[in-house]
Image 1: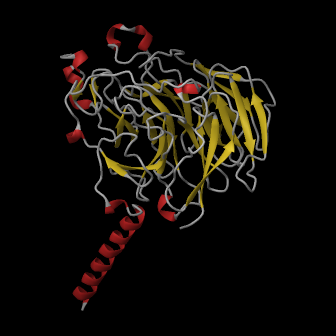
Image 2: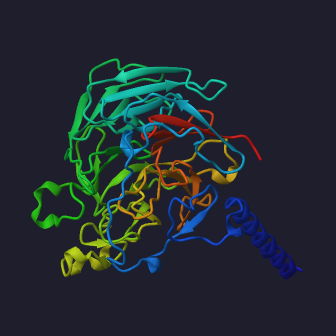
Image 3: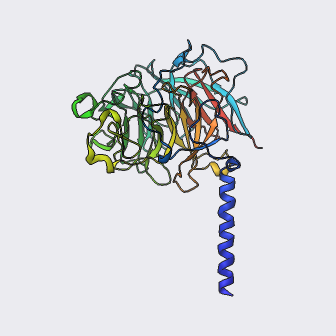
Length: 443
């Protein structure tokens, strides 16, 4: 009798797991997982999985410069085509939350529900409050001005009652006194740390600096991208403390390199389930259309991710042939490989309650779009399932697409991503200089 009961329990458990994964992938397994793709095949609900075994040889295709040629912001068209609108999966609605912005980049939600936005070129931090019945912001204010290419935004301490808002300038971390509900800074900024700054070159010169705090608020993580595409750091002092994640105490003391060899961790977020920092990473250019993939990954303390000598595990960059063989076996393979040259930017863990339960804890990341690929890719928001465990298994889904016309013209470029108080998703788009709101309305 006991053996029958045990077999019944095993059977029920297997059925439960099968049902869970069927629901979690939302019908994705009705189609084959794709590997490499481009704008022509990107659509909500299309799933991808790229593995190390899928990587081509370097220079399998010729490197190209194929950035958006439009006259608008970030190479986008000067205006959104009349019939163009972002596309989300069935059951989701897309609305315009805010328009008329200027170089709008990272977006973060404060504990009280206000939405903070970095307008990087103007050096401004904006605040949006509320959502009208037609999906627009109820109120917009300027929180601070006079910053130096601000990007990262983080509230400290972690939890419902922050005392400071930290801002990642291109060359420093500063903070403003802050309490819930403040729409304007109530005091001057305080410099917390100097950072390697600047740089804006095609294929390198990464200037964005993102910030996140550990769940216990004891540590601050700051991402700093490389100054070059793939220069040898042995003889380039300009790369000192770049292509890494730095760790500080919240007051700026205790500075150290937390993880290295990460070419450009544009977006950084802490997994609420495991406490690990994660990065959304731009990899190197000019060794082929499909090499190497960008990636989204948990970041290990002391971990080395390859740049500039290796990529995606122990694959040596041919431009550094024979260098540092002692590092080959130390290179960590990232958790999730996304399309090469996608320009993966800000990321978050979805903790809202509006979307279906299977989305809870999953990653959403903005893909700004390629310039080093013959057929464009990116220009979308992707979803990485973590299976309610905090762990990824390599696949990801196209979630919000439609920012490229069927003819290949780009009109929108997602950058920032945040969860609004009602659980809807907000996407900052610096191509159309607007913020989009994605809400779930049911099937």
